[in-house]
Amino acid sequence: MARTVNTQLLGKIKRHGSGGRLDVSACFNCGNCVAVCPLAEDAAGFPRRMIRMAQVGMEKELLASEDLWLCYACGECTQTCPRQADPASFMAAARSYAIAQYDFTGLSGLANRSAWGNLMVFALFSGIFSLLLAAKHRAGAPDAPLFGFLPGEWIHSIGVALFVLVGLSAALGLLSMYLHVRAEQVRKGHVLRFSALPGALLSAISDALMHTRFQNCNAVEEMQASSAEPWYKRTWAAHAAVMGGFLAMLIATTLDYLLKPIGSPVMPWYPMRLLGALGGLVCLYGLAIVLSRRWRAEEVPWRRSSFADWFFPLLLAGTVLTGLVTEIAVYAPMGEVGHAVFFAHVVLAMDLVAMLPLTKFAHVLYRTMALTLAGWRRAPATEAAADAHA
Ligand code: SF4
Ligand code: SF4
Image 1 (cartoon, rainbow, N blue to C red):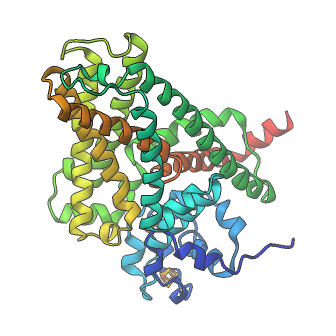
Image 2 (cartoon, rainbow, N blue to C red):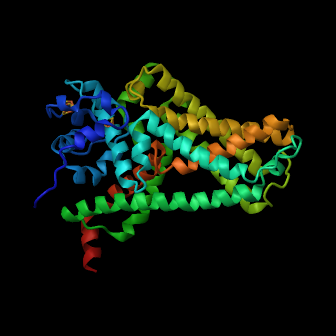
Image 3 (cartoon, rainbow, N blue to C red):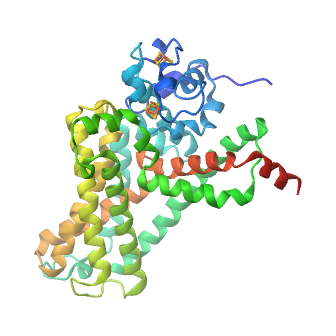
């Protein structure tokens, strides 16, 4: 069957993430990276296969590959590559390129190609949300309660519209990914058994939350074990803290809107308020570990950080910190300072949601989808065949 080749593919991937600093053209296809990768499942597996696809311009196959998302950037392959081709950074850049291709708005490509592009998208969203909020803010009353300064109903309306738009954008991105992957599965003759979908989905969600596959990466675990690092400082624990804390804040905010009138006062021990504050502290703890590892850059997975690698945790940390100060300002009014922090918090929280399907954060969606599709495809072939003929 004739295949379309994109001769510019490798160059385009190198414009993403820290890809510009890597030289995969040095790769001579020795296979060391596949041999050491704790997650590669066959001798022809990733990352070598992905690098080969990029070198020969097989864009369709690259975008249709679940393997791209089964890599957890542990860096073990980079440590053993005899040509310093840095396959781990290549995989990260290829994932960033894939996110940009699945996104129909074009904003992801802009945000992920350079620091300036990332800041431009951030400034664009911040400007829009600031203007929308400023349109209804009530100035000249520094002692007014926070929801008097920015009407809760207005924040709620913008939030609902934002969630609908972001949900649509994320759904279209996921659909694009699914169509790419499924077309390749059909070409290879894979049959899917529908009864296997719930199990594959549950397993993928559990992995996305706990990073269980990442714990198989020997380089990271050996390094951390040799440095006698306690479990609560390890990478998987930091990841679980960020994800768990973020989910707790999301649940608290959602229930807050659903269970009580918007902006109505509650005592500090109101369960949703406690859940949100606790989630924020846990999330900050995980982010502090992640950011300090990036800063120290001692371990392979953290050595080559792109602007996008820094941007997302910093945006999340800024949102959580302003949220915690806002919580304090509810009970201990801070006048105009409290209003300014509240305003900044709402804008940052909206930025975070708006940029979810466009930036590194989109890994949460695409990796979960890839893990689901991979688990679904691997369901026992005999049952699949039985279902197909039923
Ligand atoms: S990336 Fe390095 S280890 Fe992997 S096949 Fe190429 S040269 Fe070998
Ligand atoms: S970074 Fe780790 S998981 Fe990813 S390809 Fe390399 S060894 Fe495998």
